[in-house]
Amino acid sequence: MNKSIYKIAKMDCPSEEQLIRLKLNGIEQIQQLNFDIPNRKLEVFHSGDTNLITDKINSLNLDSSLEKTEITSESIKQSDDTQQRKLLWQVLGINAFFFALEMVTGFVSNSMGLVADSLDMLADSIVYALALFAVGGAMARKNNIAKMSGYFQLLLAILGFIEVLRRFLGFTEVPAFQTMIIISLLALVGNVICLYLLQKSKSKEAHMQASMIFTSNDVVVNIGVIVAGMLVYFTNSKIPDLVIGVLVFAVVGKGALRILKLSNEK
Image (cartoon, rainbow, N blue to C red):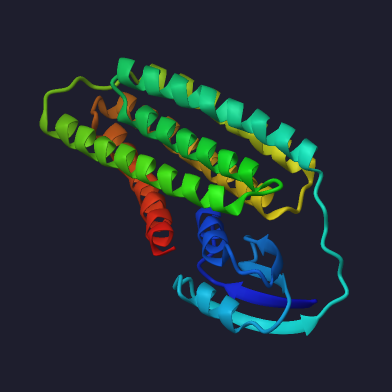
């Protein structure tokens, strides 16, 4: 068994991990992938040479390089599939609940920030659902689901941009900042609980690590909506709410485009 270590400079969130997984899907010589997103590294356990693997990774334009390849006697670690599924169902349920809550309260309170954050929660739910499929795996089915989720996320992002533009040009009311802050605080608590559950598992599995980092990023988004709510209060303007909405929709749309680009290549 060989172990090749790649440095991937632009691998800074779970979307890049999903892209790499999809790109390497179907290469029979690969036995296991170990992602270290904080350090931007990927360990590939494989047989044979690295030519095909390296070409596939480099085609993603993530500023990647092969650091070294060595013969290893390390055993392929087997995960506790049952425990992972239980944990992922828990965090999936939390994110799905807050997606529905923020979507409804976002429209009721006239806040695009909450609506955008709800879509971010939906994107989280899709990541956790994909992670569930990764546990014990059917990679072909996972690839099809990623493609469908990419189209769905892209559609939601486009509709979100249209709605932001309509509200910017129209005479919509100033959002209810109280609702923005309270619901975002609740969503923040939900994400912190998810992060705690994921960290408590101490899993080194790639898809579990990706889910943890994705949730950490969502905490930042929640704080952004809270700050936008405070700015709405101090300025009595809808602009801060629309700005945070655009930023979150852009993140969702960018991730969707990258997944679709890769899925359509396969």
